[in-house]
Image 1 (cartoon, one colour):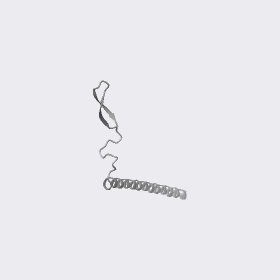
Image 2 (tube, one colour):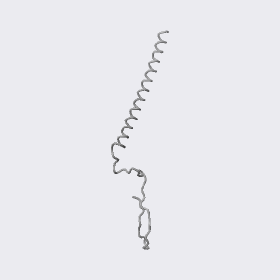
Image 3 (tube, one colour):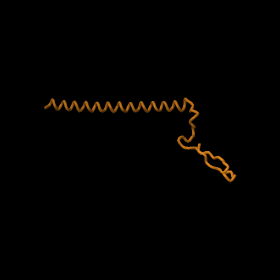
Image 4 (cartoon, helix red, strand yellow):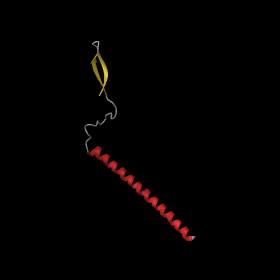
Length: 84
């Protein structure tokens, strides 16, 4: 009986140690990913100039509107919104 109890105790301790090791590895992996992301962001924003095609203060994903004038059928100049 003692050997079964000690084996179960040893097994449970080993499982607990393995779980702590796995959690520690996951935590370190997440920290490494976060640090890599921060390094890339710092490099992209401070060391490299922003690309010309992406506006710094722009409206990414929104349609920009441009006012245009057009002559109506009756000869009057009418303003309308033309979407780019």
